Amino acid sequence: MLLAAAYVAIRRKRVAAHRALMLSACGTSALFLVSYLTYHASAGSRHFQGTGWLRPVYFAILLSHTVLAAIVVPLVLLTLSRGLRNDVSRHVPLARWTLPLWLYVSVTGVVIYVMLYRLSW
Image (cartoon, rainbow, N blue to C red; front, side, top):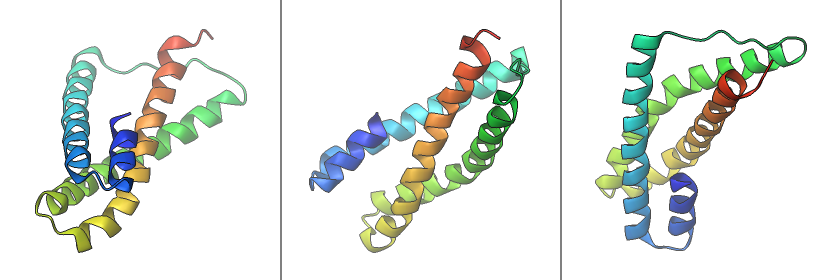
């Protein structure tokens, strides 16, 4: 939600709101990443229980999520640093790639969670 609100803010030329929302999104994502890694370091992983056509769908989502999650972290950091330095000419072209990837990783993370922990197989 923070990413979408930040996008709307910058489209409306509300730079200060965009900056605050993006910093909030970065902070929230960093806290999530730390809690996710801490949890899985102690609890381990859970195997997908679904069968049939859902199994390859789940693993396709998981694979794309995992690869893009590894790519998006440095992209976010680079985009953030360019934005904070007000290097708009280099920030905007990179942000056009970073935002959709970050949104995809965020949404697919929720989908994976639901498929693993909330659906009854």
